[in-house]
Image (cartoon, rainbow, N blue to C red; front, side):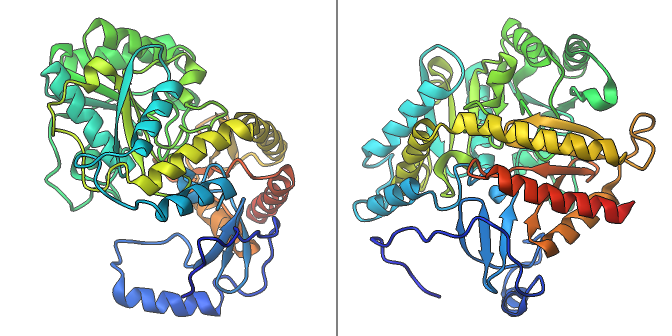
Length: 453
């Protein structure tokens, strides 16, 4: 193990794939044997390839193989791996203050991140934030704040949702395996309402929202409901984009019934979709917004941001945590916001959507197992169905996704699977990915699909 001087520049990596050994290579296999002896089997890895360096949209493993990364740490390194300004900000902060605990002796970096969140989250009103460590912790705090503000108990989520692996968030997830199976008892007073899934339900946004709110009124009762937590574009569930008008209708219902609407933007936020927050695509202005993943360029940081009167419902000392809003992570987050502005990264999200979607449409014209292409910005997915069923039964084809991801990795391209039924192939590249890398990745996908034909 080697360490780099804080003054050393970021090591650039050629932005092209290159496979020089078997995948995984001998050094990765050796590390994997060490891992099996000391790391819980519950912490599984999609691919036992051990990464040594990363830059831009490329990962380099210990054997020298270079992979095009279409996952970005599941949406974390949105501005690119080891983006120079983020590294510099974190390195500089490391030399000043690493930790004091904001609730004991505060510091400016935390305040600056809260200011930036107030500026960039949807809604033109006074906002406040609390900074925490992870997406699941942000979800937990959002629910806690909503319950305190409303004095109500119940929490509602949507079908196909994913919100985390803590006790409360496990109960909020739609899919039990592998996130919750055997880990009960789970938290109570969590209710799963039908969502908008246009490819399968065929409902308009108005009709889908009426189905959701009718279910909530009958099964939960609006007067007992503290909050409705929604992902504007669902992540692990398969990048479902709701029908037009669905989310604004939910917001209108929540406002009329005193229910706090919480947007889980953990995967879809921070310029991922060509907007700072995916809510903006739908005219949604949530009461609370949850931010994590891409906010600090790879360092652990998350936030709950929302209407000041809701955020101030918590009593002094009721929010916080030892590492929440760590100075180094906050310094990185400020640099991320600046990189988005200075490097025009919202436009890069739009570029990626255009390039990626056009390439996928060409593949869909050839391979009928591609049932739907959906998403926004650098958050695009294809749902794979059984051959010949794309316009009929739409039967999930999880086996195809598994075969594609496995084979593509051997060629140096890392794709992610998703979806309630495991039949969605998702693309979450960093905003640093070039059109050339996208084209190369799609050529590998083309070959993988051809192997299945």
